[in-house]
Length: 171
Image 1 (cartoon, rainbow, N blue to C red):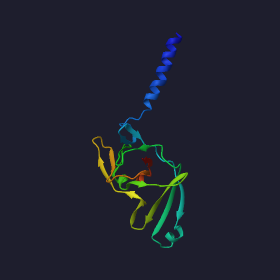
Image 2: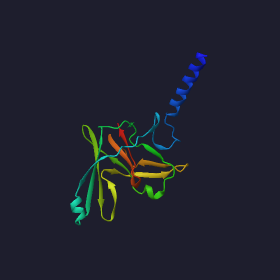
Image 3: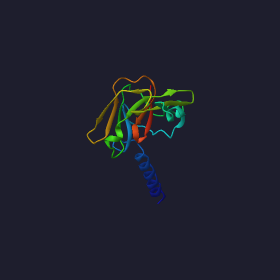
Image 4: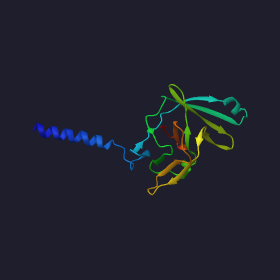
């Protein structure tokens, strides 16, 4: 009887750990690497600093938000310099994908940062964005790939007005 219970206990916990392995068909953001799919973690709400708020309210055309995240590097390490990201967040309307960017983050000793710029008449964009190719996959998922090679460093994949950011490091 105890062997039977031990077998059931082992089977239950091993099945639970199998379910936690990244599977590219599950919802989320994945990077395809030589070692298989790598699931990117969503960045937490950033620390914010504003610049130019008074000038913006009085007629100046610019307003900047500085985003900072704790940690000098991402847990997601990518060795490819032109990675392909698969974005499957369920139903994603095309208007929510107007400003998809891969942004190079400025790396400091204990944090990473970037700026988001607002200007009248222009869409909001993060500074340091790189040119990307956007395509739809066969299952309707979004495929994001930089047009050129990424230099080594810290990056963020931003899904625009959806306010979703995912970080990764290129080594």
